[in-house]
Length: 89
Image 1: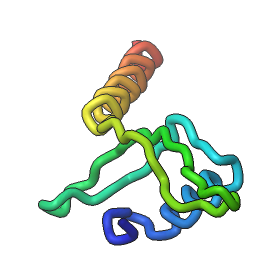
Image 2: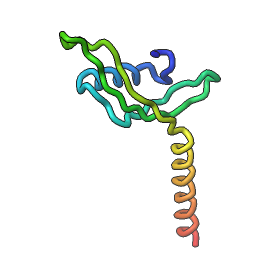
Image 3: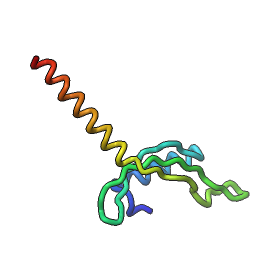
Image 4: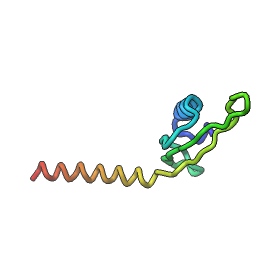
């Protein structure tokens, strides 16, 4: 799993929060896909513990947010250009 993360420190931070709280909701991470491209994902996960309370697994889902993030960035850029146009006018 560690090799999938664009920034390896993100994996450590994610694990620390998940293991401290026992769950994590919509935590954004940047991963690397099999072609080497960046993916932005939102993770919702929880830990599984054995009878002694030791964490034995993480379980959850990742939603690909890459396209949504790109659209948000394009929208912000369009808003900036509109503001510049208004100032110029």
